[in-house]
Length: 492
Image (tube, rainbow, N blue to C red; front, side, top):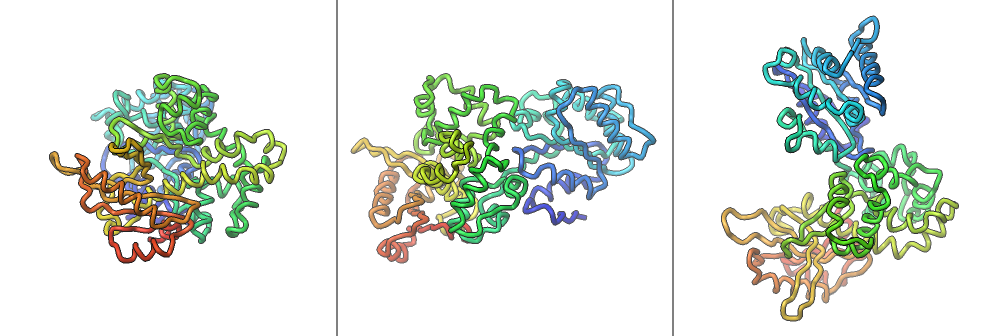
């Protein structure tokens, strides 16, 4: 029977269902699951409540030596099992077997949170767990322990089950805990106004802890309170959110050259989305950027989106809105902010915020809406990929930037791929008939492009400022024209 999700957990229905299914597995034999996700996403709450709901064992690792960690684990095991004192754990092999022994009589959830801390002090721990879970080993076959390893260091957690890693092929669950999407985030913050929801999301994204612990439930009361909220909750040195973007980089052990990684992120926040653009911004050769870009991708802070219209070309974007906001608004004025001149900094930063933070966020929200929320009939089919792209007009040798290119599923064989929708997205400008005509010319260019089927391509225009009456009338009579405002992102 499915376990009821505790009321203190917001959203996360899918994650809770996967975890409870894993924990309730009644088959013989110990099983392994891996849970990962950036910090502040609610992983610990999920796993702690799972252990409590199933009568399981939860252990939160800390930065410590192997000896101290074994001692802490032994004390926790003694308390859980009702032993008169701590369980003696001379080494990690004994510790893992003691965890498997918890499941001798029934399925028992065993959570090891912050697992990377343990491995930092005991590098062979993944191999020890691999050996403990060897098929046919009595300690495994006689156990129904449901072992969950959790961690926030994404590069490390991603490598646990990859390639030739010891635990590859051992896990029956690999669960990433992602930030809340924009709709869930608006509900979590209690924001009903779509425009305000976009503005708040552009700063704090979908990280749950940023409302609870980091600003003490201080949410803007309405659009008129947004500016004051930014100053008192985000640009205020007394609030934990103020330094959070810096800590996000400092916490990942793979991000050793902080200055280089900050510069790369600053380049992307400034609109330099290609490898060459990043290299020019930070004064390095493009060939020198492979390692830092890969590390930032593995850490979950950068995403690389291939350009569907230009083979071999990609754009980079920052995945954590707070980092974009920090790089664009806070980092250039850090001294003034530390001197508590947040009001002045925010007043001077309005144009920069709109162009470097709010505009790109709105574009990405439209792409996510197309992927996850839009009715397939609206966009001409089920969207499999949505990204920005650059279209070159060979007759004039000019480039057209398309904020949205939505593609359908690749066909079987060598057929053309459906080009469902192309779009233009603007946060702070009313869109009109000229914008529609530009999109129409772009569609004409794509119509003869090999590899794509543009026969039914829709034209999407998205604006938070709205549309001219002329464009609205045109859209009303043309099924191939789609208009999207901020309200539609949150309610279609």
